[in-house]
Amino acid sequence: MSVEQPLWRALTGYRVLTMLYAIGLFVAAYERFDRPWVAIAYYVVLAGWTLGTLPKVSGAASCTKRFLVIDLTVAITGILLTPAADSHQRIVHDGPTLPSIWTAGAVLAFAIKGGWRWAAFASALVGVANIAQRGRPTQDTLHNVLLVCIASIAIGYVVEVARASERTLARALEIEAATRERERLARDIHDSVLQVLAMVQRRGSALGGEAAELGRLAGEQEVALRTLVAGGLVRTSHVSEDASLGAVVRAVEEPDDDDDADPCDLRSLLFPYAGAKVTVSEPGAPVGLPPKTARELAAAVGAALDNVHRHAGPDAAAWILVEDEPDAVIVTVRDDGPGIPEGRLAEAEGEGRLGVALSIRGRLRDIGGTAELISVPGQGTEVEMRVPRNAGDPENVDSTRGKAGKER
Image 1 (cartoon, one colour):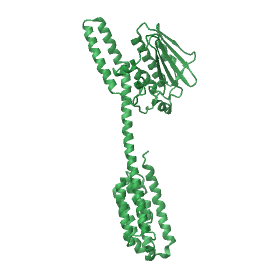
Image 2 (cartoon, helix red, strand yellow):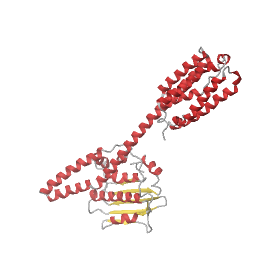
Image 3 (spheres, one colour):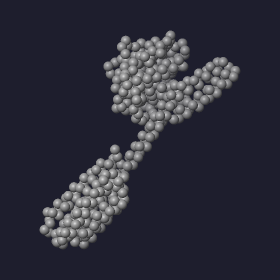
Image 4 (cartoon, helix red, strand yellow):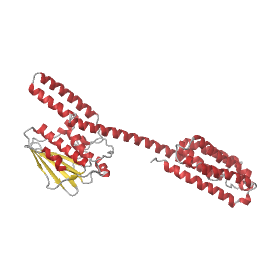
């Protein structure tokens, strides 16, 4: 909802109430008017105009410049007609004008529609009309005119600031959404295209001959593609040398059609990873998670195993442990490889190798979870992925964005 929309609703009520107030003042002082029929004629026009134009002050689109000019003309006409209807004694003693405080509604419409400059213009015309009908500037007249002028200009300025803030927020959300989509594409590329290019490079180098040239070209394309993927990510924080890998601009996740589907058993998605070198330990009962959450968690496990194969070697053993706790599901992937040297993750990021940042931490962050990587040189690597039971709750997902990439 627009920030200024409540102001239009308030202005609609203000116009009706001040119209009734002006008519009530006239009825209370009817006997003091020299020519009450002039006031009656004006109030008939004022009531008809106020009630008939209520839709015009329901929003900025319907409140046209033509309406504002006519509305202000009705207010100024009522001010200038006051000497023709009221007694001279009441005018000299600063009696109210025919429209009374209804006039401020016309000025406020200018403020909400066009900002403080329009408000200053309208309040200046009303001030001149008030001084003209009095015949001379009095203290009360100047006080009322100045009050309307300051209030309308202040409201107009607030409206301008609110509109600028809305435009800035809309632009920021567009950038976040574009970056989020770019991150998703980068993650998919890392899990597919880059892996294939790396394999072609390794196999080509091993075979030699023409295959070696093909492998060299594949390696060049892999480097170029990694550079492109890395350049598309905008880091927003640098918590630590390792934590900065997962800190990227985020956007609100669009609803997934599978969010309301029946829970998916995570075990069925992790079972295909089991093999001679990979041991899967899981509970005897189903581990139910929303389908999207289960798929992303299983994909993160696959990315962790791929890292084991690439960096620890094909002979390294890996263990997958699934823990089904009341408030969270924890999946731990551990290997017996050489471990990750200190600073290697930051160096990998600089080279465009974002497997940990995107395929693991990025996926977990997307579903409201966290990932912790623990590695000691010579003692293997352990990746612990935790997904809360309420990971599908948007509020829980939002709360993890500021923690992306941080070690628990």
